[in-house]
Structures are given as C-alpha cells and as structure tokens.
Length: 64
Image 1 (cartoon, rainbow, N blue to C red):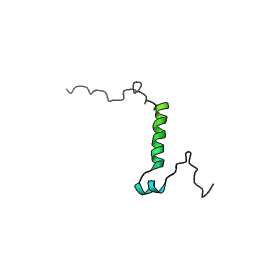
Image 2 (cartoon, rainbow, N blue to C red):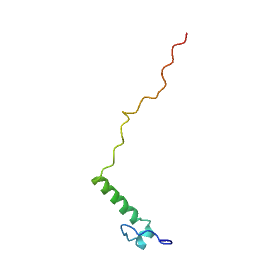
Image 3 (cartoon, rainbow, N blue to C red):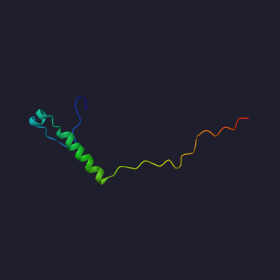
Image 4 (cartoon, one colour):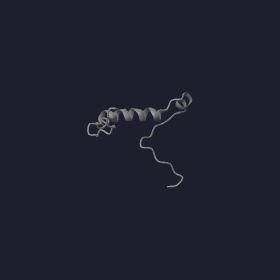
C-alpha cells in the first residue's frame, strides 16, 4: 500500500521518560531477540579454502 509503513513484528512501547533519557527500547529488544536467536540457531561457519586451486605465478627460471 502506498503511504503506509510496515507493521512491526514485535510491538515495543517507548514511553516519554525513555525518550527523554535517550533509552531505545526497540533497539534493546531487537538485540536481545537477535542474541536469543543466535543461541538457538548458531551462525554458519564460512567454507574452508582447501579446495581452491593455487593460482600463484610459477617460479621464474634462474638467470644465466
């Protein structure tokens, strides 16, 4: 829909004292949710480079 924002997945109430003191309840809840998800679903490990071919230049022959 045009001119309508996306509804949040989790509603977080940011009170006027939170606003005045610079606390970000949405950010705090999002970080806690992300850390909880990392505990249940650990991050993937990157692939190893063991199957990558050696593309370095060959050694030059000795000078005569």
